[in-house]
Amino acid sequence: MGGWGSGSWQIGKGTTDDYRKLDIRRFQRDGLLSPGRAFSWDWTQGGESVASIRVRVEAGRLILIYRHNSGNGDWRSMDYPVYLDWTDCNLGGRRAWFLCPARGCRRRVALLYIGGSGIFACRHCYSLVYASQRETGDERAARRADKIRDRLGWEPGILNGEGYKPKGMHWRSFQRLQAKHNDFVNASLVGMMQRFKMEFPGLE
Ligand SMILES: [Zn+2]
Image 1 (cartoon, rainbow, N blue to C red):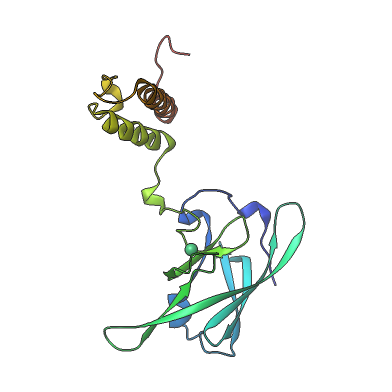
Image 2: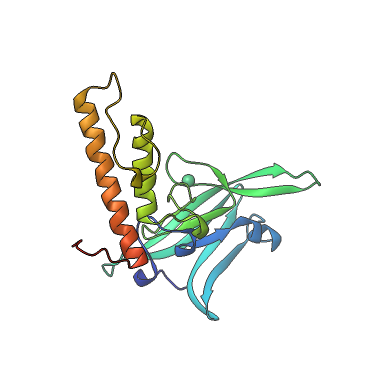
């Protein structure tokens, strides 16, 4: 059985493309979900298997069996139960779902991802976004700055400069928000410059 190479993982926030996934719709379509069955699942890249797991099907759950390399050379054997749920389809038949096995989640999902931590969990638990939704750091900073501008009643848009202290707001709160706002604006501008490789004369 293959294992998880440490090199193939990106740890931390990423897009769904950075993680390997299990799709229960595929298992169901291939008729793999009958209790008592066991099968292996391979992920391939350029026709070669890069990772694989064993799946044992029990009543109401799957056991995922694999080894995970945490990156320091230690391989851990994982034996990871994932409970299933079934819903009725409009056109008859039943549709299978994973219940996300991460602690406290149990969301009903079609896809489970595995990341650097070596556990399978849904995209909510991994805070994953689809690649098309990925925000760059400077876009995120600009959005956060805009949120503060909104609280301060300032015109939206980080290039519109600073406004005044809103009536009734304490100076200390105002200064705290203003400082946060300026940090986000700076982060956004630096990120934008790097992204567009723009050069502002006189700016280090
Ligand atoms: Zn989850």
